[in-house]
Length: 262
Image 1 (cartoon, rainbow, N blue to C red):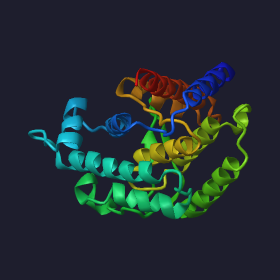
Image 2: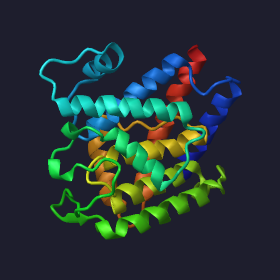
Image 3: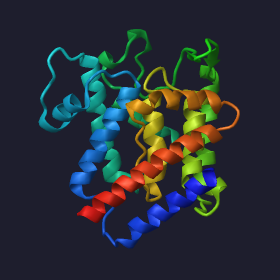
């Protein structure tokens, strides 16, 4: 039941708060969080580097042999964007301009794009984009002409919801708000020619960060289930909310255990 999971989320958050730690992150823990986030979010998008190779690249600046240049840039740019987000997440605003700015930084190198003609960092899509469901059916996203208004409406809705949070009410809980954004951005609008998944997960987690929660990691072992939940959530995002609740519980437990040990 989602109610029980939200109760557990709130309890874990209170347990972390009770430790009276004067900062959200220990430096070592923060570095692990950023590497894990970068690795997992890019792994979902098909990056082939292992966790060990990713760690060596981002922390020791060791480039794996025979690595694909675009994949290296995906990881390096993602980490740089995360560095900025974690430094400024309290002051970060939810705006269309901010989403475009982070997309521009994330996808700035041509080698990251599978099709040169689609290269458009920081700009909304100019071509239609679709995905193929597991049953073979084509799922279409909004037309390019519909994106600007849809994004304005989405950001307005998110900011309104963030101003009226009640963690004891599932409908107004930060996780529900983050899941709503996640579904609208990725499953309905899909506003960019490429990089939607990484940007969508980044801003989903920014909602959680601003409200005192650690980021959610969607691991490679959960990738198939994650994609299945998209299909199950076309009309009602409850299946994705349930999935992300489990991931948030995992992150909260990881953070609590780390601070208890240290």
